[in-house]
Amino acid sequence: MKNLFFSMTGIILIILFTGCPDADFDNIWLKNNSNRNVVVYIGEEGLGEPVYPDTLLPSINRTKPVYKAISQYLFTKDIKNSKVCIFFLDQDTITKYGWDKIRDDYMILKRYDADENYLRQIDRTIIYEDPKEGE
Image (cartoon, rainbow, N blue to C red; front, side, top):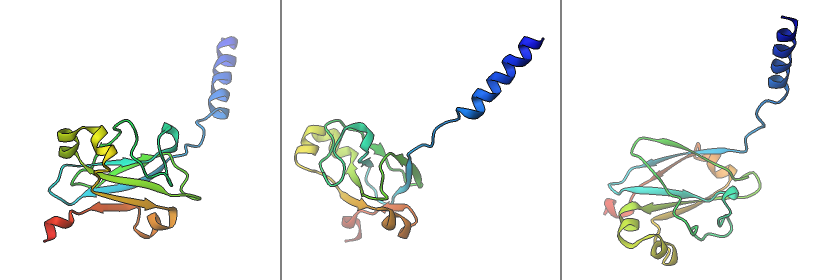
């Protein structure tokens, strides 16, 4: 019984003193207000892919869908001293031409280079609206 008590005390102390390290995540809210099937790529430091000021698309398609309802996206990028590139792309175009052509011909819909101040001004929310739909 005494050994069990010391074991449990030890486990509790380990849990208390080795909690999760602070995560270096930031977040942004994205919404698709267009009729397009929009996806997003957010340049992240931890993936070994291009990040700001390099505005190339990555060699691997790491896009995520942007829904009509607002959605939260997490990314790992220190934007207190830098910017994050946010690329909006058309999933149907990616399907039709393939990622290599999209990347080589820079076939994006819109790109934002956002820093901490800009994200604060827009309440961390970026809404994609197709300029052609307003014509």
